[in-house]
Length: 402
Image: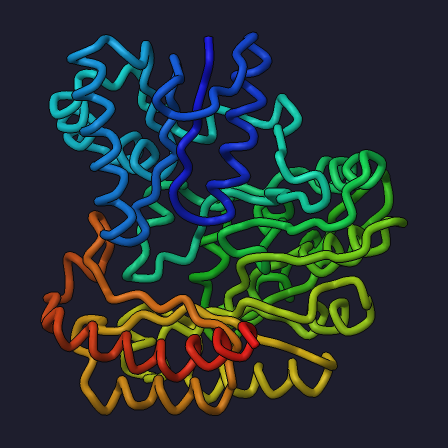
């Protein structure tokens, strides 16, 4: 049997596909040179943007037609965002609809079922993607990730360190740590995943009243977690600064990167670790999404424009040669021209070297889709997208081409 994996979406999906490839090869399969020559096709899907979802549907349609006509490929498997969303939709209607629409798909595979039993099959022999967590607890109103990947689950601390050490022994020199929000890595390991939301919702700072909080043991040694803010109070612990530092100190590692980071829990400890370890990348991805406080509030982003700018100022002060990239959504429901101008202003102040700019598209199951009308015309979204593209991306592209 020959397999082929078609991957859509982000670095997390790329890392997932490497694990899927390892699983398939453990069953005796070999990689096909193209999707047309494969017996077993896996589609690792993305639903973060409508455009990516449409590309996924197009491929499924084409494969389903080919299978119906020619009997090939032998097996079609859909995993990633689409399979995850369908599996988590409580009524079962989404999964039923997908199966009725494409009966030619043989398996709908939630990615967490693949697990970490096999070492990922990596094609890059210098740079490795290492997942440290899966899922997200933040529920930004525009984002489908909590519904496609579920609540945040952290991989064991020692397991990640061991994998990174083995990678260096195998000749890798660059590592990127991957998570939907790396900054909150380990909170579930310390307080239990079932307690995260409870701790956030308390009126007072939880750990001040509980002597047992703050204890995390690694090989019998107590590690002091970093406490991060939620709604102005220190409520959630994270092990990410310690994890990042321990990986950075592995002998032979030349470059360490991480994605993605939320601005509201970018701690002082994390800044210090980056500043004190020269092999940690000086290019940090810090999604702003909007420069307007009113839009940020509708997005359920837990920071203001001024708080974001203070963080950027602190990062620039503490970390030499810092470069920042970001994510921005234009045309979010209710975004006025003045609110968009605030995003333009913040982009000019920060000086991003790159921006992943998206025109807002309603995503199923998200709060924005159910609560806000998609009231910005496509023509206006496109105009705003182009303005930011011209401001941020085109000048850097031209500079890099010279």
